[in-house]
Length: 212
Image 1: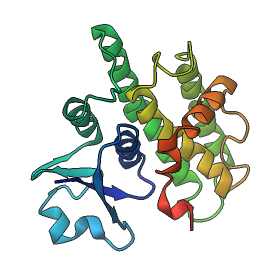
Image 2 (image 1 turned 60 degrees about the vertical axis):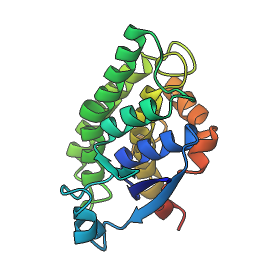
Image 3 (image 1 turned 90 degrees about the horizontal axis):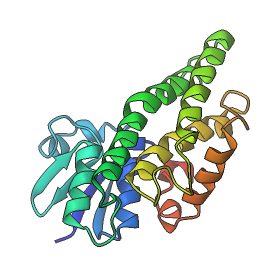
């Protein structure tokens, strides 16, 4: 029985799980939920995940949510194409970077969306400038992690979990030129993004509503 994957278009946490599923070549049944229609609040979905959040998976009757837990589960359940290194300290580093992406980078990206794409009326220049400066400081920390092609040596969950947040930053610039970071994403981080976008899993997981 194939794994069922519940996804919401635009959620970076759902996107990281989708990237892992595709990269690890795990068969899955894709369920696209609409935030606008309130699909995550529907009784049928709440029966699976009482918190009504994506991502959620159901694997042979076992329901699981929270992207970090899902990624760890997929790694142990499907180890043939690993996204965690074998070395203890290297694994800890990957997990730390994933946590930093979720807890330090993601809140800033959310604030950028709230100040631009989700803002009623034009953005407040002073607020936007301060936020962009904080984002650049955070991105510089991530760029400093790049000693090779990827964030922690080989391609890993560090890359899979961090990339969606950076891609959303670029999405703001695409939708509202001048209100994102423009060309100010640090150069080595920009090159890293291109490497991720060259992977087959990227093309297969571009958020559906971006294509419309």
